[in-house]
Image (cartoon, rainbow, N blue to C red; front, side, top):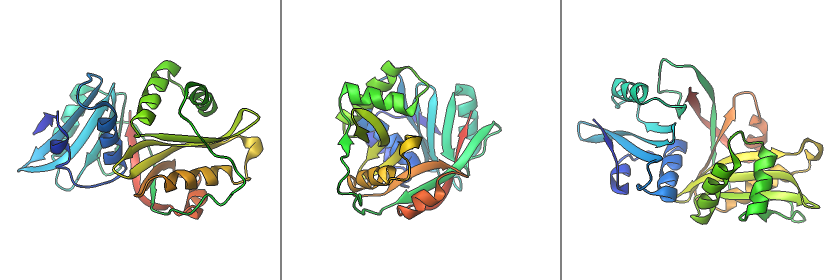
Length: 242
């Protein structure tokens, strides 16, 4: 049975902790249950919570125990509801086109390794506008800014960057933070300033700001060695259905 949720205790009945649950619960921490554009659901089977998922606008994040969940029921729900994207572990199978990559995680808390580097935490409009432009986001800035600014204000996201003469050279952010764990994204360095340790310092800095596990999603063929050297390990395969 799939039911819509309006309290955190029912959501917490799903016990696994992974990239997907951190995204979902961070969204609850950010918006709660009172907004029509952010909805939360769980699947119950024989008295056990076997899946939870969030729908933000038309984008779904699913955390599921594929060994015990009623997968056909979930698939039917998603197909009837419709979605722009559905993020989940690669073990959840839908008859849809998809992108797939690797989940990595780390509990490493090494220092930034570059004491001469000035790392700027981003909170206000102008630095966040610079981050939006630097990362070349596709969506409208106003919607992106409203979301990231609220997340930072609620401590469910963190962003930082390296600047030189007012120009952003490198960035990183924790796009979801919940209960001491986080999801890393937005790691980028201007091509002209690579191999100077900027991105590594930013990742280490952000990892130190949370006590628990930091997760990330990467493409199969990209950046594995970079993250391995920072203490991350390959742990799962993510999949985004379209």
